[in-house]
Amino acid sequence: MNITVSKENYLKAIAEAESEGEAVIPATLSRWLQVSPPAVTAGVRRLKRDGLIRTEKEGTITLTKAGRAIADRLLLRHHLIERMLTEIFGMGWHQVHDEAERLEHAVSADFEKKLLAVLGAEKPCPHGNRIASDTPADRRMRGWMPLHEVASAGEFVVVSVFERDRKLLEFLETLGLRPGTCLRWNGRNYDETVDLTVGGKRIPLGGPAARRIWVASAPRRSGASGPSSHRLPKQRQSGQDQERQKS
Image: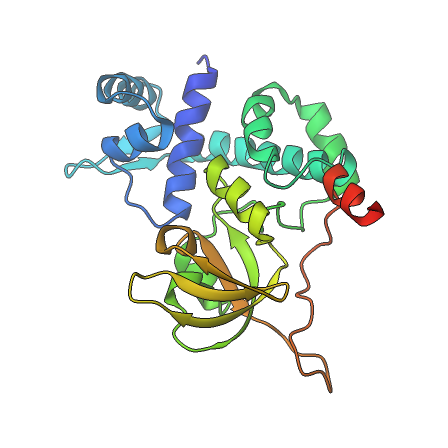
């Protein structure tokens, strides 16, 4: 069986959509991969022929054991590349997803082993996301919640951000909102924007962006009046951050 880049993209998209809590149907893949419905129909037909997916009567698409193995391999390599680019090469956290999308298909099994030996598999990616399937239900079990669901004023820490939207990531970077950032939720406005304090500055954040950010209650240090730094892996500073500190 020939596993093409296109097939890998479809299988990984199914796994990622499931992790976001979506029921995967052809329209999901069309939106997720930004391809036409006829292209999805042809792609699904090939994947089903190769025994990589199952399709239910209601149209839901799920991965077979073989399809899941391929998707998991791509997710692991994507994760490792993102971490390599940030932790070793110092790229910005908001820049690495697109690079990893291109490079993940070229990683050999030997290079994957080298990356695992250097980076390990325990830490989340620069966006706070785990390698394995991590559904909204899983996140809620850990006490996380989407920022737009916060209902009372308090101190929180950003733990995860949806990474497939480059414009969103760049926007959040300009606000200083990234995994590990401590913030204060002040309230919700009539237009569904949320009022936050980040780095001592009051900022409004629209509902669509708040829905893509997961937060947890900020832990407090003994005797401290404010939130402590959340124990996420420390990311290497980008060149831009280093320049800001020098200035």
